Image 1: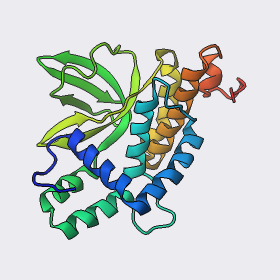
Image 2: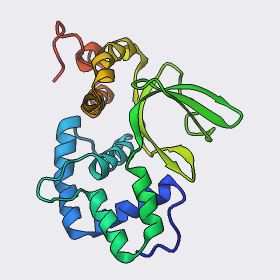
Image 3: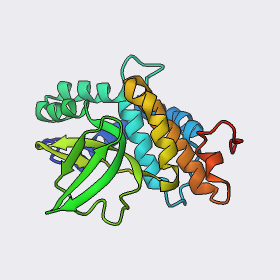
Length: 223
């Protein structure tokens, strides 16, 4: 892999770091183990399911940025940084460093106007405007969704996955958000929990949704 120019978009960045991970023998083994870990937590997905690519992208970003390494001192993103520094690809290294602090949250779509999309972070309350009029076309304003926001060339952009929750559970989600807003360390476990509920919901539409998005302990949980 040669890098004459730094990544100018999320797609370029994602493709480059994914290729690095998949072609590094040590990290490739970690990916295999991490898949078992991630999908045992959030629910299995088959490669013939509609949500396969979406959930694989969610997995890869979790693996790259969030997973705590067990057998190594370094996370995949740290190994990639070391690799870039050794190669002297300092412009790409700067791009990668800038992505370490990105926004991973639960959002609500507000509007599309003049080629811009505005969304609201339901955890921090911050509104973000992105130069993007296509990604969320057709999404209802009553849908809460998980994704990540990255920044390239001083412009925010969406990542490549969206976990969309049915509006009927919005009230339950809002109630669960209260402690999450007060403790930053609770955000990622909460988002993982919602992913688990969402995967189960997509597979078992005939089951009472309150048993799937299990916020009410008086109702039996769907296993």
